[in-house]
Image (cartoon, rainbow, N blue to C red; front, side):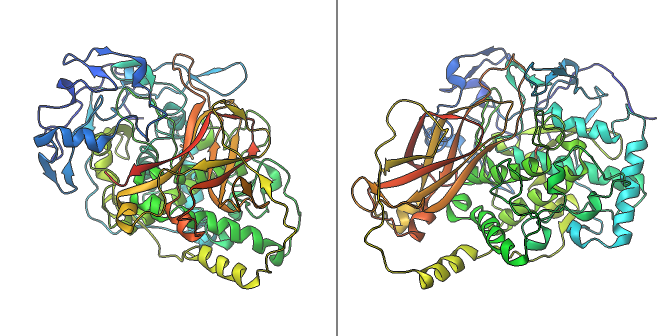
Amino acid sequence: MPFPLLATTPISSPLSSKNPLRQPTKSANTRPSPTSLRLPNSTTISCEQKQVDNNNGSHGIDRRNVLLGLGGLYGATSTMAGKVANAVDGGPVQPPDLSMCILATDSQADDEPVNCCPPYSTSNIVDFVLPPDAPLRHRKPAHKLSPKEIERFKVAIAKMKQLDPKDPWNFMQQATIHCTFCNGAFFQVNYPDKLLQVHATWLFAPWHRYYLYFWERILGKLIDDPTFAIPYWNWDVPDGMFIPSFYLDNSSPLYNDKRNHDHYKALMDFDYKNEPTPTPNPTPDQYKDVINKNLQKVENLFNKDNLNKPDLFMGAPVSAGEFVEVRGALEELHNLAHEWVGPVAKPNHDMGNFYTAARDTLFWAHHGNVDRLWDFYQKKRMYKPESNLADYLEASFIFYDENRQVVKVKVSDCLRAEDLGYTYAPEEFPWQGIRRRNRKEAAEKKKPFKKQLQLVPVSEFGNQPRPLDDVIRVLVPRPKISRSKQEKEDDVEVLVVDNIQLDPSSYTKFDVYISKPIAEGLAAPDYGEFAGRYSRIPHIHNKKFPHAGKAKLQIGITELLEDINAESAESLVVTLVPKMGYPSIGRVFIELQEADY
Ligand code: C2O
């Protein structure tokens, strides 16, 4: 096999010099920031404050204020993406030093060490270039693939599985990359105490986009078909809310037995909580309610808040030297398919555990849909980058490409699917407008308010952490009421559930509902409107890297408050409904966060 094995020179050169987004020399290196201090020679003085400050917005410091304070630096470089602001911390996250791979950790109770190191390490890392113009690859919904297309896909996967086990193109090698970037196989270059992690940050969507991109092109190479496109699991339409049938044929190379067999023919329930599917053979009518709720959850991804403040959708900003665990709404929802496909019992291999998730062919179909929803989001925002910060645009990773070359990719090159040579076959989005349609329907049916309605007393959360072993209903004051249209455009109203402590080796999931108090200190018995979800797939980080298993959830509620007519409410009733695991909650509050960067 002509792949370079185990050369040992580490990767160098953090920024490409021909890069149009390259920063002026006065960069983060020369400026102490409130969260980390990095010396010009790249040694690091680390301090605990480097962690995300959980009490202050999504990032501990207000980036916009920092940028404005820099005067001339902001906007010093202009690019196709508009203005590029400078990094405020350690700069953009960099690819790992391949020679420094260590054992990663699986989520067994005994923190079993696992080897996820790539079979290559090379000095010959080249910068990624966009593929040459060619007919676009059309990714199609798996449940609509023709028999011929299914066959072609099966042949490609079979070939990938037959490759030498050490070949970076080999199916298991490709799967292992997921462990590498999640379970602690690398620390960040220059930050030996900080894990390299792509999940639960704004790198989630870009990293997985590249991951699929190379996988698709390698498969295309293996069957000598430059138009080959991977199928996606179209779980946001009713017909797609089942595991696509050809993944269930146990004689196929697409088959994986390490799944929850109860779900082989079952309608996906986005409210699933590790319990048996209630009705074994439900009629289409019984499906309706589940489908409806599923669709609402997809639509909720694209609410005004998530569109105005991309980290609510994408995940929290992260710079080199930081460890962040704040998922965006896209990743929170995406966790469902991992839970749904993965077995209930620990260690939940394959799909139910990050260490092994990509060993299941369904992982790739699932992430196809996740990528497609990001593509939808980007189109809705007319391709305005989710952030103009170099920390986002210049963040980079490495992959082994379809030409057997190790390439360094960066976020700014993956912000349009079409530039990467693929597109999603036009499909319908039946969830668009569903919440309003449902609300209207409900309003028409609504019976007059009954006097004997049993109101529930609610009080504020208090200062002590509380176990979420039962429903928690609390009254949460708002920072400002009756905001003007302009104020709402400037600032997004965000509900923060903070300091979540959990068992990282188990599933954790809870839902958040919001309603208006009926009278002072009194709530209606029903929880109100679904606002968002916290969900975490089991994964443990190498013990060397502290702060795993403590996190927060942020949900934009500006649009929701308009919908439920709660603009003038001074406080809201927030209901936390546990679904899986027994986390404890440190704090619940509402704050205003600046929209967009
Ligand atoms: Cu890298 Cu679906 O997770």
